[in-house]
Image (cartoon, rainbow, N blue to C red):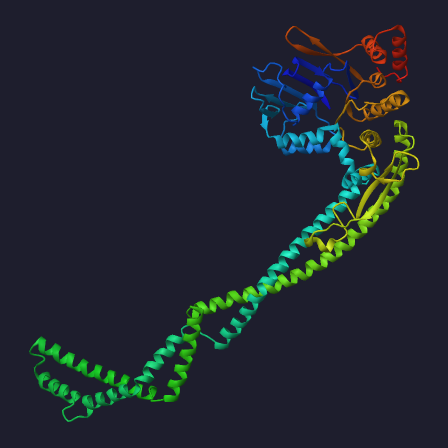
Length: 567
């Protein structure tokens, strides 16, 4: 609730500080006294536009401050305080609007600069301004359904349904994404399957191409190599003056002198090593005769195999090792794709189970709403008749949800609020056919209908400040008394600030503010004061007759006395 309001240099207020209380706060005064300035200031602090003429002295800025007690039962308010890390140690917060001489505003929360978007969030949880715009919400079928659910204490059931609905909706979105991804991957998987078959069909081995190329080189040069081997044997061993015999001759000739000279000894030793090396070389060369053969069939086989391998390497632009690594990669992709298909099947099953569950929940919600609707109709009928609408009738009609989005086609016939759409049908006069509320109600009827709803729901709504700005316009007689009682009953659960011309409402006030405009030579100023019991009597008398006659004062006493001790 609002604890205090400070205004400096605002419209016709030079300086002002007001302290508010719980319950019904009534502001009264002559027409044009400036009663709406108080409400206007609260509105501006909480985000309403800054308009020309809002500065009392145009050469100086304006300062507006409202302090709110922290209500521990207002859950949305507490969540908002936590969201923005607001210090709550003092059990109060203060919101400030500074208006510069250029009519630009700055907003502050506990001294910290905040954006207009944050101000709006706080306005939504702190303030309920009973206005024409508020009345227009009654035309909104979603708002009508919300009101019905609040009346029937169905909000927890609705939130439970909404949570499951959103969870299922999220799964459907995920399923659609997976199915789309699967469709995009399907052709790629077919390509991968073909490539796996093609690569595995070649039965590749790392280094195979190098070995085959070496073998092919030998086979290609086999005849030439074997000819060299044959000639080598002849030259070394078989010819008349063979290399072997020539070296042996030199060894025999020089060995007689090897003990006489170290150089001769080394030479003979080297010649003997040369013979041994020749023997080793010829031995190795002879092995080739058992290995190498002229085999054109094998050459063709190797050539074909190499052509096949080289063609695959060229196609994939990879060597054998890289192709085999790629094979492992695409096999993993195939496995992942299969896993994704299983995930899709599992998700489809979950969604089907969830849809059956939320349809049951929706049926339960509908059943509860239809029972609630009968009680709500009777309650409104009974209450609204007291506000000068004796012939008024309402009927709540149910329809199935029809609007749906493509991606939630599986949730066709459902919304976050269930499977119901309602329309309040209204008739203000006997014999007039019931019509949808948006077509049937006038401005005055709208205002009274909204007031009725707030009165009925007052103990079911989060506590906030409810402002009524001259809601009593055009009302008199017995209706005035009933209207005052309505507003006072709302004040039992919420802080109500009410600008009023009705003495009946003023008599119900928990705190009564009298507003007077003082006109000076150059400027006018507004004064606002909490008035005493005797001053209230005089103010209510003025509201009754325009003057403080003895009869008016007596009537005021009667009004105050009948308000069950209020005042």
